[in-house]
Length: 529
Image (cartoon, rainbow, N blue to C red; front, side, top):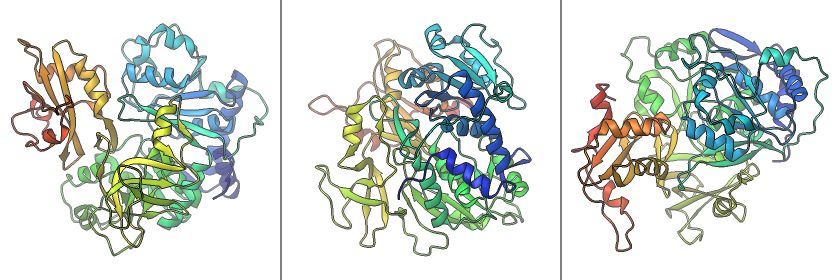
């Protein structure tokens, strides 16, 4: 594949070719490629003057916006590492990422910073500067107000007002782009260190497979803190010099209106998003729109039939820079669980529990190899050696290859829950629940859900005489976990099935009726979901 250069060099080159081409559509307005690069250049100058330099880690905590992407470009132009934090993370999760990555700077907005007013003094003291993105319209700082103490805060306007020459920093495709934290089986998120080249490589390979051109507009309803938004949506649009319909966050009520206003033609939707859009009342004009192609992990025939949209199936993971497998537009041989074939010169193999390659048709762990795999997990050599072996990324997903090299998804090796496109490590949820003083032990699994793919279910054993309720346990979790990790179902039990060595037998829990006799948070809240 070769070195495509830094992410900044790549985007700047595309802007130089087409400065006036429409790039980002956001809340009713367009920015051109020239607009975005000029803004990023100004922010980079200011960041350089205040001390951001190559190798520094810069944490990001905010929702989607053009300014988020502009600041990302400015940061990586300087060779600093982009460290995205999931929007909606709770304070312990925010502290973990910032501390584990040793981030020196934070990009956020006033609302998020106000919520962090309770952050430990040590955390704030370790930050050199906080850079504030414009406040989203309709949002306000938390009622507690912005903390008075802590690092100096500068707005993007402050940074652009600093007079300085454009920074001259050599950043290559081999340099580190960022640290993308992803849930793992150990319970704590692991930081996948991705290379600069992976962004452009993902973009060009996906744009080629999906046949994107300059007249396309790629919808981006996925967050930019995730490779789904950055590598799957932004990157292929840049490669084709297409436009991007950027939503601050996915909205069912605004989705089709944004598609109409932007002229969106293609993009990535998680299965949960398609399921949510199907809950809209049917209308005679359901097919009267510009959207022609959706990429997703599964092929929702109801969505395709109702809205007249082709669906290309795909599979990838953060550790691979989002470069995995795809089918193609117009492909007619879709079969159950088919998730495509490799992009570019990517290679796949299926291995058994001992690491031996299996022949076509054999079911085992999916391994992938290409030039833009992660370098490893940040400060975690043990998990790096376990995941990267002899140049192959061992994914923890289970699949099979047919004799044509097509990949079929069959499940997961890891105890990972896939809820509405986000990975939830069962061990992380278990650790939080078992910290409750009334809990003896618990086990967490995923149960199938027609909207969110899977929901989180906890089996909980309480201390003798305890009167812990589902509502109380959820409140405990909500204070310590992101909302998507909080269990929907809680099954209070007196015992958990165990092996002779004392290990909880999750397969027996998964074999139980999924929602029978347990507390349902959605039902208790009267939401129905």
